[in-house]
Image (cartoon, rainbow, N blue to C red):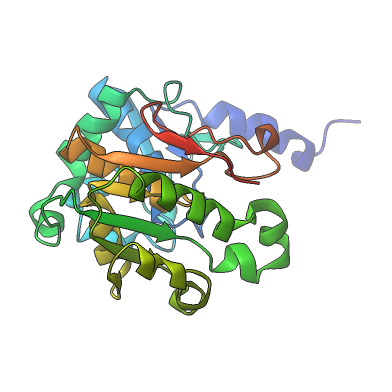
Length: 269
């Protein structure tokens, strides 16, 4: 009996997808933290003369106006051709520092694609007397499945990280960037012992710009956090960054793979 068309379909698809262009199969719900790692991969490839594009997610348009260069690194879902090679996203999401990208490649991408006029307008000059704290909660703690994967004793970690920075002296005020300011008001009231506390309001663009403007930065286990630190570190070689020793429970035993080795790691359990 001859093979059915359905059984031949994977083989036929493989024969078609032998074009020069490769497309990263971005999850359609991917937000900016993950998108930036995908765009970094496409930028690296294009610097080497390879055709790599990132499938646009639902949140692509939120950032294309801020960073016009990402348009050339992306492709709409309906524009993916039958000959395009398809690249699934691995569990580490192309985020492994020193393996998926080098520090020089990261900083070249930041300078060429992210430090645009639209973004630099909302940046401020780093202030050594200010401590910036990013508190990522949201669906990490609202969604039971995500809480099992990403949740940890955030309050204890933040206290240890802040005390480490404040103990070095020179901190006069604190800026908090969070998707859960109500939680911060209750659980982080002790920040007032360090100095006046400013909980920032605004859009994700303004939140990212606040992190990217920091001299002293305490991160959460969040790709949004990491990119704030990457941009801040590109702008200033003296940026001090503290990050938790945990990212997600079901990859590599929880150990983060996105950290710049220059960051200070604080125990998080």
